[in-house]
Image (tube, rainbow, N blue to C red; front, side):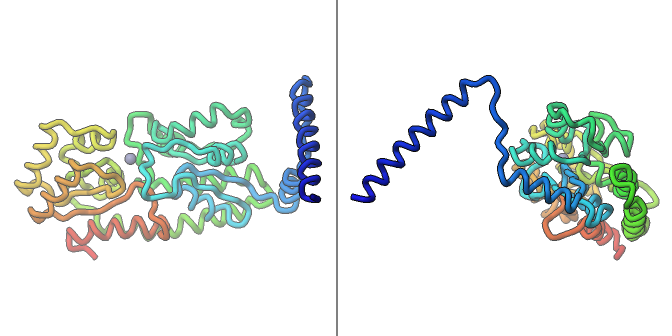
Length: 315
Ligand SMILES: [Zn+2]
């Protein structure tokens, strides 16, 4: 009996609430609710004003964290190696993170168009420090190979740029940012040393499944024999019969020293080529487009470089 009357009372109050909501909708201006969560967020910010950084790709997020230290809160949007970044559509969480951020880092030059769209739709975008790595740091344009993080000069440039941008937002800690950037650039020297050690004195012919590794390949003096095959795979298309035949012939005739295979996408055409390379004794260098879980940039790049070094008998 008591339960029943309670239900009845709840029914009345729910009905009253519904009327209240309807009345609210009829007014010209909605009152802004002051919820406990929004006041908490404000006080947290006041106590610990970390700079919010959003990196479109996790390898840039790592640099931002290294340079910003405990002064930054970094969100990396593309961080799942099982996902093909070319097919990415931003989630509501990603859109919100971008809207809330003070610093944005992304590749640009057509690689992560979704970030251009989010920033274009964001009225606060002009107040953010935005680093477009491909164009701002490497002078590339749309249509150029977008996998610029494979260029060994990119991360040192980004570290220095972020130190400057964070210093603008937080001048009191400028020396910390500059110091950490310098330290990060210093750790990159071991990568440069490895590249120098493996670099070939005369160009070596290779083929690749996608143009992911090409900037590193350039640094090592490796020349892709059929870039059109890789470009088609990259764009999600089937390579033409003649490009497919070219790569097959490169393998069968041992014209290439190695084949670079991006394991982050699955294409039956590429799988066929990889099998053919294996049966013909052509070494496969396995690479990924984004940073694998549990590895930092140097470890990731070093392991890929070691595979190339092994082909040339360089350890
Ligand atoms: Zn790609």
